[in-house]
Length: 188
Image (tube, rainbow, N blue to C red):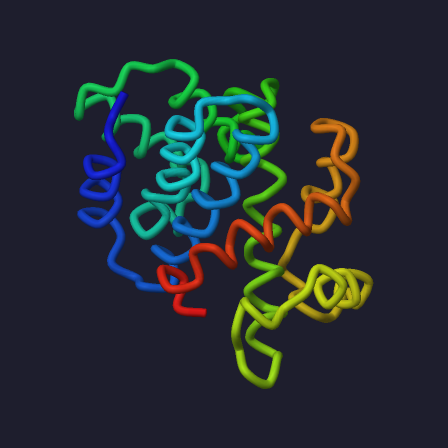
């Protein structure tokens, strides 16, 4: 399995946007927290979160290639762990038709990816723009305001209840807490 340092090298060589990198760091943090919750390998889940969107800058105009390029790059770097490769592919199965989420790690990625964006949106409308002062209640308050962060797929996040057995309020709390611990990396 790749080390985090190797994963960061791959990410940074293909992704220049600071905000996109921060999104990947946020998903990594949440995935590590969810790995702990499910007794999974925190490093493996973290690598999946870190790299899940690593090819986005190169594939954004062709969504059917998103995740496929990352898996290509990972294989070229010697990564052959099927759990990692399938989890990354599962993140974009709606466009590629490959590898629908099945495992807790795959569903965790699928559900938390969109949630990190919603949390960042909530933080950015707060007076101090800080994760530390943001509460799970503040995120939940914005949840039903469909015009707020309208691009966030709430149905995707809500699958945490059925697919992971985690009630939405708890899922939000887990994600927020994980992101708060990495606030410096996230610039919030």
